[in-house]
Image (cartoon, rainbow, N blue to C red; front, side):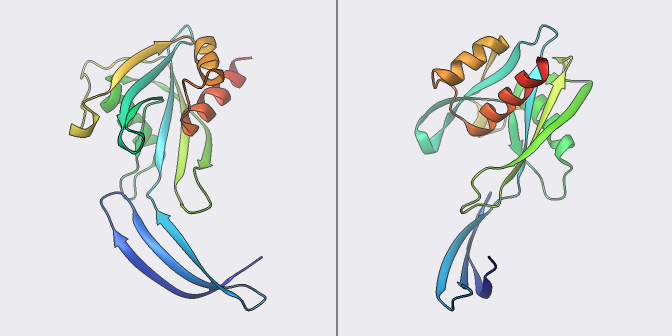
Length: 178
């Protein structure tokens, strides 16, 4: 089903997202409004040690007012290659680097109202980079966690890991290990 775009207005321009309001017409002639969050997208890293332990981060997430366990990830800079973003975020958030990268997938996080696309990469043979973490001020709460793959899968089942990108990345990587 295609809609006719009657009007588009940028209602808000923020540091990370913009809010767009579209006025549309259905094929039936009925008009409707769609609110869209424009997001630059990001990259996610399933970082695996030699024994297939995962490198996870625990960090405070303000929308939920609590700490969330996640894979290292971050926002794409304008025009940035997703792999470069993944490599940068792994270094900045964890102080680790990798020599072996594979793209697992790309996901639409919330297609009902947001155009964010997250590119999920698997990084193997990770080693401390020697540069250490380069955390931004809002990332000061990050704690590193080294978790065996089977434990991470159990954490998903127990709803200790509830972040969507993290669940997708872990499940895709675990499926590749079989």
